[in-house]
Length: 187
Image (cartoon, rainbow, N blue to C red; front, side, top):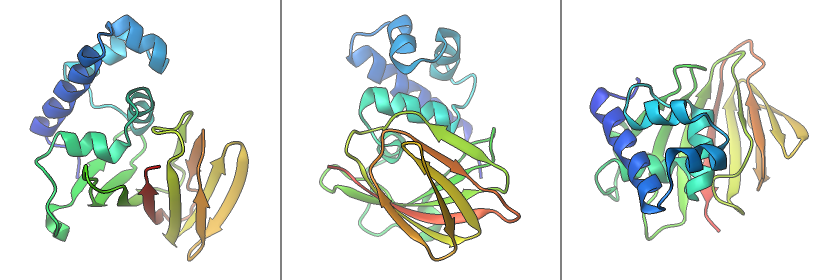
């Protein structure tokens, strides 16, 4: 389920383009994203795949949702997205699997994401990808500890949490994986 090599290369190219469009050096991006220059260089050369946390930092710096960034390296989204055509991305470091059920489109403000966070996995996003981004998280299976701006929330299957946040932390305490639907609405 991981990203194929061609997709890794397209993502690397797009990340480099975004940096160049802003006239930033790798050092400037490293300072803004609080990530090492060498890591950013390796990501932009497709030597390594970025983790979900790193993509979250870069999306925050570039003012994009993660889905929008990933959609930018694909062809324009269709109105109907068949299950087999939905973009799936896997964070190899945590095992987190992210499916773009309804990918973003320039003319629409909402998207639907399915997340699968393995038991014991923990992902922290220390800044919003887009300030004021509205989230609706509906937990389908498992349990999820979601910390929103320092306030912990414990969710069980069927629970729904609405929030905007400056920082979030997703933790799946187990024993099974946490599977959820996340609706993201741009301001």
